[in-house]
Image 1: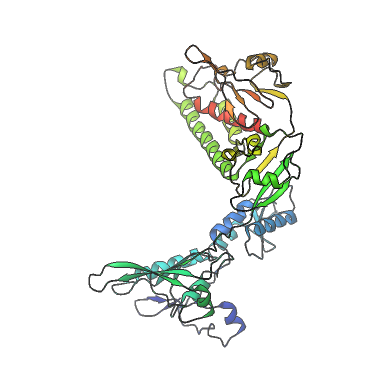
Image 2: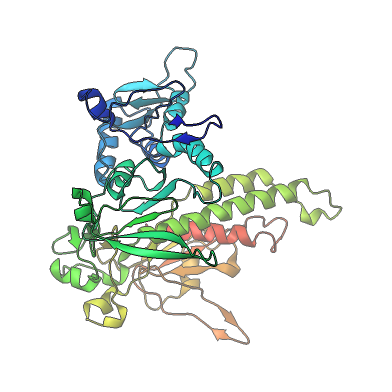
Length: 481
């Protein structure tokens, strides 16, 4: 970065540092002037460093070698081209900064402060003040000398325009193309100002990217201010999607699936189910659903913490609005917030196996199917005297099984008893004058859940609704495991 006039306007030059060092006579070995600044980027983005640091946190039981191996495996999974591993270790040295977590970077331990300093050398951080100055020194008739590249490049973003910058040099500034880049053509969007009415319009030009990279002057267009280069992705090129089948499947294991393949088609490839399978009790999980459920669980917990604090410290003459045991409530909320969502999706596997297309669906990367062994049992759990499992008896209903478990405890919420089916669906047995009875027949693998009335001593039903929902969610998740 070089100042070019008394107003201290700047001009930016792009050089290949390796060429400058290895070939001193090359054009990359620029002669430096007074007040020049050389910016050397590291190979990571801020997000890359944060992700690695978060994912490679290791417990005290793990050795440094295990942590580094875990980091390398994660990097291979993400298909990142990195020659080093980053791992956070909880080792405690005897120096003054022993309280700071140690980070292993390129085989050496650095402190958290050093790690934050490393993040200051990323492209985004170093270029931010340069881009701001280029924006400020633009004027009438001179667009900001900034171009943007996005899509299938290693470091998408905004970059300063260097003298005689072309499409190929802009791609070099962004770290080069990714494996999935579509090289037959790319899109170059340019802002054009009409000289008569000064109205701006966008002109999109198709570029033969393969020829541009080779240096063809016809395709390697010169970049001007406010250009936006879009590097497209190869059609239908996705990371390999894998689905895991476990349990009573003839050939269990992890399968690579093609885009659009359904669960029924995959089960056919896997040889179908064994004679001991219980398809009605199949457990199917999906990562996208798990993340969504975990977000809801965390939100429930946060809402309950706030509500508990509000009820505890509110100066109200009505003692019914005060929680009798806030510590117990908070302890329950903390336990529930630590529950891990499963991301279970109810599937009708028996109908899928019968080739009923309306029940079949396309698979996604990370899907998991477990087909259990048939067990002709019914379980009772929650606020009962003796949580227990019985053989299924079609003559018995929910009340009969509750009696077999010793009945409900005093703190049980008997109005909200529900049944979790083996396939993950839930129904609530109800009875009433207006709506009649809803005593569905129990089936093999069902679980009767009796939730807790979180503050039964105060008989508060309004504010505890969220707590009951949270508890029922946690119990249902545990029942499905």
